[in-house]
Every structure is written in C-alpha cells, then in structure tokens.
Length: 277
Image: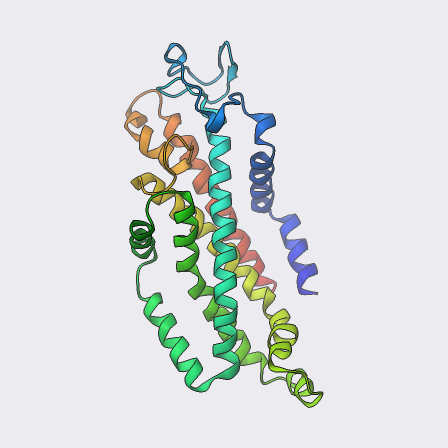
C-alpha cells in the first residue's frame, strides 16, 4: 500500500516529471547535444558569445555560445549528468552506511545505541558544507572525491531516521512472533523490520538527493568540485556571473535556474511523499 501510494504521488507530481525529464536528457545526451566532442569542449573563437538561437557551422545554438565558442546547450545538458550522478551516488553511500548504523542503534539499544547516537550527534553538529570542504581538501579535488565526501556527510540523516523507525517497530507483535519462530537477529532486522521503514527512507533520500545536488554545485562554484573542462552547473555560474550585468546574463542564469528548479522539485516531492506515510 505504501509503495502504491508513493508511485501514485510520483506520477501526479509535476516536479517528478521535471526530474524524470532531466534524467532522460542526461541518459540520451549524445543524441541531444550539438557538440559531440569529449565534455562538449569544442572551442572556436570565431563563434564566441553567440546569442541564443544563432547558427554556425555546427548548427543552431539554442542557448548561445560561451566566451570560448563552446555550445552552451551541450554543456548544460552534460552538466546535468554531473549533478544527477553526484546525487545518486551520494544517496547510495549514505544508505550503505546509514542503514546498518541506524538499525544497530535502534534494535540493540543500550550501550550500542548510546555510542552510535553520540557519534551521530557529533557529526550532526558539524556544518555539512564545511565537512564536505574539509574532506575534499583531504581527498583532493575531483569528481570522485565529491562523490565520497558528500556521501560520507549524509549517512547521519539516514541513520537517525532508521534508528527512530527501529525503536518503534521492534516493539510490535510481528517482531516478537519472528523471535518465537526462531529467526536470527539479522533476519529480523533486515527482512522483517527494515521493509517497514522504506516510506520514511524514501522521504529522506529525496531530500538528500536535493542537498547533494546543491552541495555539488556549491563545491564546483568554489572550484573544488568538477574540474575544467568538465561541465558543471556550479562552475558555469562561477565562470559567467560577471555577465549578469551585460546582455549575456543567460549564460549564468540558465544553469542557476536548473539548479533551483531541481532542488525545488525534489523538496516538494519529498514533502508529498511524507504526507503518504
């Protein structure tokens, strides 16, 4: 019933269709982009700063070209791959770490819960962006480091949600029945209790996806995320925000609007999921 309700919410939510459209654009990017060079990095000074809709020997530049003559539409589409991949991998890492930690804390209680709750509280008190920046400096600059850094800072939210669900669920009759039937601890935790926590987990994962996208954009804006010439929405804003006061403000506004629309869509979708719980 929970999954059926969530699927109905997803299909009826406009933000879900926006995210789905971004995913399809990212998957089929080679069929959509005008610039087929690696990372859409075909430079030609002769076509630099063309307006949206202008044409060149490459074809029609729907979002114009940048100061290096690169097709802006192609780079924006490829930039969606970066943001979506960071969100997906970061959420996956947070689930791999957060679920076992939260499950152990909630199910066993006692000293195990006290220690793990203390650990979560310590990490929870550190600002996420500062922790990500610190991890990025330790691990070095690059996209892989961003995946790991963002994922390692988001497992606390997952663990806290799972812990709370396990504390409530382990008191219920079906858990006592599983113990009486002789099922082991691992079976009870991950086969009996965990499936009943997917609803709240879906909510936190959607929110974390939006946070990961926003953090990646911020890191790229600061120059410690995706490195040139790899296209990223955050780095595009950094490179072209001086053009906000000129007639070329769209170079910065387009990726900025996509970031805002993506985060808004994911957060509003998360709020809709929470109503179904």
